[in-house]
Length: 312
Image 1: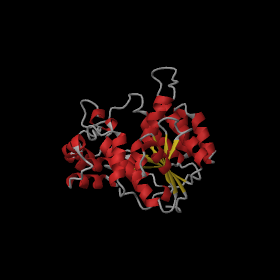
Image 2 (image 1 turned 180 degrees about the vertical axis):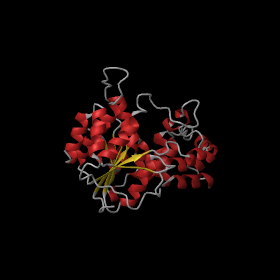
Image 3 (image 1 turned 45 degrees about the horizontal axis):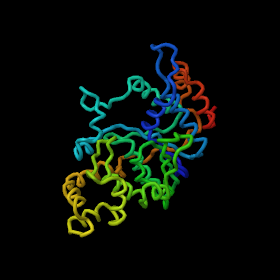
Image 4 (image 1 turned 135 degrees about the vertical axis):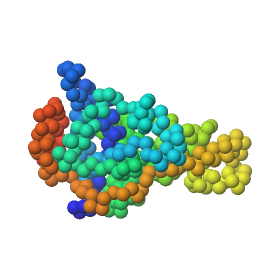
């Protein structure tokens, strides 16, 4: 790595290019023309983020495996509803988005923006590993539309999430510990992950504990400190855990054994030691970038991206 990051921006890339695909109009003149709304939107998102947040370093984190075996083994329902029918695990993705993903990869490589995926890991795991590696040396912003990554929030180490679900990259919710306390009534990232296990998340096929919603989950985590403390209280007959709530928690024991392996991001994925994270100081491959711009109508967002990066 060429120096230590000072302000690191980590992109949950799939979250952003899916948002770009659905949010940027498809302006093709003819159905046979290649779709470009996701690549145009993704390039514009990076330009906005770099302009607004002035990072010294940036990594586009990638899903090399969108549904890793270790999570499916722990909880077979994990993302099962997103598997494309008739395949051995391919994600059901919009037909017009699929051909744009390789073009986004080519754009990043030609410009010189670091893209990192790790086999058998999701982008969340790449992000969790990079946060763990650099949290003592850099302020870190994680850009995502996925609440799962709220578990990384850590004010002491200047780790925030720029949550794009409502305002996009132009007006994201800045998620820090104060946000988590105000929105969920919990104290930090670790508590958020424990609450998420109890609450569940239907979008990921995570059932949660029946009858325990977000507020009850937060109350239990606050009362017992963490999920382990709650489970010890159940096992030891704490009188505060009683009635239907005790019955539900006892019945969910196997789920509570497995779910943390699904919810918790990996912190030690095999990220290369010589990873280059700095923003590019020159276009990595001008010929390749020129060919991409000649093939696709992306000149305007590409020009903005290069301008923001100081590469025009």
